[in-house]
Length: 470
Ligand code: URP
Ligand code: ZN
Ligand code: ZN
Ligand code: ZN
Image (cartoon, rainbow, N blue to C red; front, side):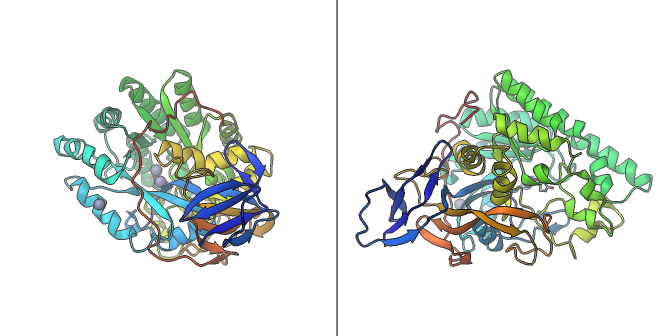
């Protein structure tokens, strides 16, 4: 059935205007003011923004990590994402040394295909580079439409890859048309600092931050940028947490290196002092890279405003406080790294960013949706409101106030890192390819309705390092 969204304000990364929008067969078929009502279900969006669905380029759903598995899977994680105004997630498919890439990807398809309620794609982790991997990579791109590869420069003896692997991944990505993503922290230095801290009896959650200094992030970011330049390749730095790494990215961009940076709401809102909360509550705030001294937040906001960082991902990686985070009681290095954030990413950026005058409304759309869709080969099917694009739409009330709480969130975990925080602005209804997933703040979607997205090659959407500002 046709749907006509009337009386709303359409907001894209470049425009804000009043118009109605017609949906037919899951795509946007008309935008204008004189659309015939004929046979269409009318949805009144008066007083609301009509936004493209959020594209979250950074999630870890049902991922084995830190001796346990992330609590939110493709069911609870995508439902929570939809409540929060996200209609596409790109999740990290982990690989194991010696395992074929195909087998790793099939594992991720099995986790997701009967559960996801919104559309989803995968990035592929590269943990080693050899002839077998090299041989499989073109097939991964052509057959699976996976056009981004992730290399971890940290988590020694677990996920960490060496510089040869990073460099060869950069070379291959250039050759085959993919974007390399890095977790940029110096894992060797961190490993040493962690051992020293534990030897000295320093076991509390705050030592997670103290053993992962901002210099370790800045150094790895600079190294990855330099190797990208050497390989004449392209790089996306995930979860930039501090001035050290934001600066390295800005410097590299100024030198013409094709490098992009993502930050996350936790680094914009929370800070290192949260790790010192009593009764082991600091464990709720253990992310890698760690939360930083508060002054870094201004640097990150400014980098978003000026286009030196281009996306805001969630890095959704949720663990219960009771039963998972507490694996690290008495040894901070055993606290599973990560937190629940998929649901609040969009509203935190609107409330803290747009409402506080740090970014414009159009920048907000770019940061939560458009830019990621462009970088990861989904644009203009996803990431904007345009005729012919998927009707992934968020009807967003910019005036509603709410308090974030684990009592009311839809993620599967027993705490929320933003508990008690007031935010303004909330999705009222959310559509995925023209079907309601959230209607009047209630879940009405279907498990398995989310489709796997094969993505275009990097560069297909003519993004370039020179397009800093929207
Ligand atoms: O602490 C974090 N960020 N956990 C998720 C894994 C990663 O490094 O992105
Ligand atoms: Zn497959
Ligand atoms: Zn990471
Ligand atoms: Zn992550």
